[in-house]
Image (cartoon, rainbow, N blue to C red; front, side, top):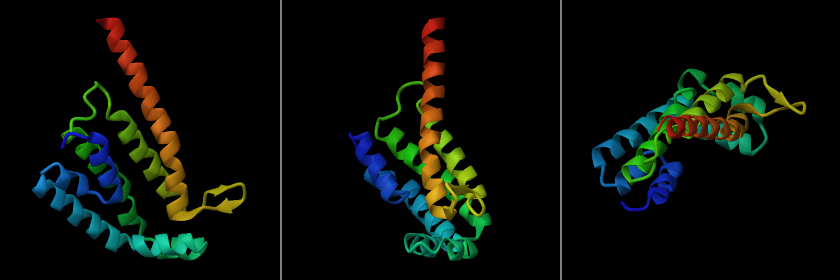
Length: 154
């Protein structure tokens, strides 16, 4: 694969697809299998369906948080891995936006059953999705600071 962004977008569609596009078939199948296991055990598709219908309380009741909390790290690591295998992320510390997004989304999952934004309970889909934004901002800032420090040392 010569297009890291294409691999990244396929991994966004489903963890493991980017690896398959990159010719990493065993790793891709492993990610797909892990995604299906976590998805089923967490009841994630039902949570998504209920959230899109605005039934946040029921989505929270359906969520198995012990499994759901695995999803962000699996998802963002699969994205990073396919991006890197396709030739992206060659700069030092380029993994930080992915790592920090995974951390922030995991924290979003943890607080999704009781955190309200403007008086609205967002639940286990919308709050973690919103947490991607500060995760990417913080990760990009950390990467920039570290890259600047490395340039100053050289």
